[in-house]
Image (cartoon, rainbow, N blue to C red):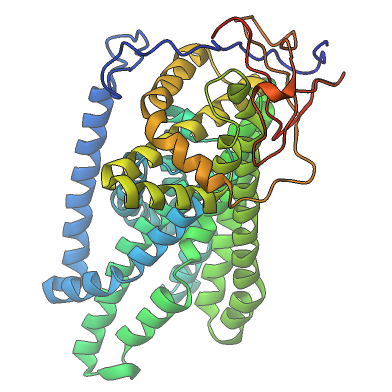
Length: 485
């Protein structure tokens, strides 16, 4: 069997577990040698200080515009849609949940840094634009506001929000595996931005109602809350999700596709700006134009985004089903595990079973096992595409170590949960055939024996069958290696 010349070599893996002497599941951490100025703690501290200062400044500016009472009312109303939006994006991210520190950073950046940049830059940019383009004799406040909302705010705000996605893309590269990752980070960032912006809008509306004597459902506050928090809470996340899709596609690109890695995020950012400008322009004109844009553009695009995210999530599950059998064949995983781990339903069943039989700690161990196995599958896919990076071996060994430490708890419940997943009709693994000894890349098929050595499984029986193209049927129990590993 020969590897196709167009496919990058996939690094080999150790077929035998070598971590039995290590005591705790948290003892294994690989560390790359870094320069003194390339210190993660230093970077994290600088970000915390930056976001904290931005938060204090934006808090003071919003309170200055709305007053204390308006600020408190705006804060109380603006926080209501936040849990629903965050829960929606966490639901999208169930296959490989992002670390909470990434999501907290994204939300904080959107709520503090991006909002502060937008609040300060929008006014200056609008003044410059109207002074440069519009005749000063025909200028008025309403025209300036329309120019700013349509042409300035989209550029400034989407650029400020995209900075959070760019930072995570550069410094948390392993967490960007596809479209879902980009959409989730973008959505959380935009949710934070919309949260602070809603405080300002709702607080100002409350102040206007107090001055004009309006109250009840016909007040400006109620109308603003209905439009921003009920009718279109997805507006900002939808705009920024365009940028997130671009970064997600760039994250899936190979090292040779450098133009794609640069141009896709830029094109996606421009799309986000255009969509944001259309939405703001329709809101400025109001009436039928706003309703037409909402019904004919925003709602269909939002539905398309949901479909695209679910489709991408299903692709992530197929990635798990495709790449984990290589580790199953090497003896790290049992045959049912790739099937169970590639099903969200089976994952939930495994966690619930562990919780009922062994307690909350066991359920947490199963969840961690699932997360590490998912990361291992995505790491293997990046290696197959040639984008894994120089730390592939160290990262792979770390993930295998954590799986090995939790296997006694996780493997039995995953085997039980796999019974609930129907076997695929055409279960093929479209990757290199596994091997039993370390090698620069998979170049030889394993030695096979009678299928009865392992016996029947819920997913079929029989020895591993290698065909000339390098595929092997998934769900078939391979012969264990004969070298005693």
